Image 1 (cartoon, rainbow, N blue to C red):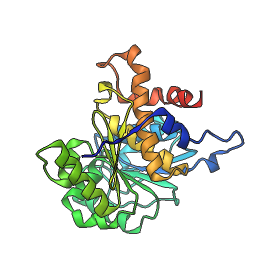
Image 2 (cartoon, helix red, strand yellow):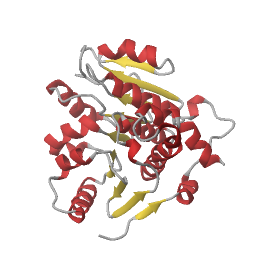
Image 3 (cartoon, helix red, strand yellow):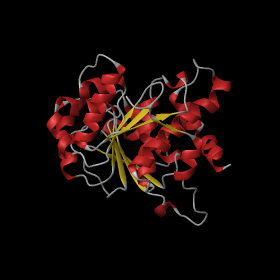
Image 4 (cartoon, rainbow, N blue to C red):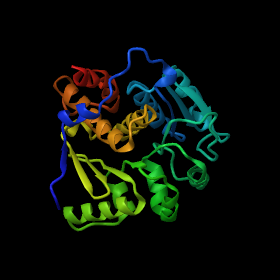
Length: 282
């Protein structure tokens, strides 16, 4: 395996676009987060909040009906659209054409949700982040991957990656299989782990931020929100992936002296996004 390119602060500063002082919310992108099912609406909350806190102008979250009040109370800045079903998503109908969509956190694998994902992929034209149960559904219906637009960002943790590409016997085989998958579907794979790698066809990038504090429930949901936000703001997918994983890791590096490893939660990633951006702006 060839040496990966390191994602360093120097490289990030070359692709990072500071906010134009004269901007307004309509110029900062409108993202859609499709997430949640009964008992997992928290995933939708985390992804939506991180999407907003990464600089997106507007966020609409699509959830089953049971998530409506939770979203409206916990994040007043987010607009909410609901499925006709109470407990899980069965038909994705968006009230707008978004600049980017993040789909998958906490949606479950109910048959109705699988059909909804298929129908969504068939008609969707927006840049896309696929995570969590969206990846699990696709790993069981691999022919649907043909519907995924070029340069879609997939964010599997090790188990989700194994479901997509099959088992591996060594690190080098894991990378070979992930590269082959990325080339076949022209997708950008964010291999979550310590460290996190990005596979963009034959190119491998290794993130240089982050620590073991990120190994906590909801951390991936937050990353989905961050990546979707950057896509909605007009970053090319390959740059959104690099900037997203760098910021995500940087929040944990900033927070660690205060929280320690054990007490850091996914909400702390969101709380420290502002400080992470300030490090880039300085």
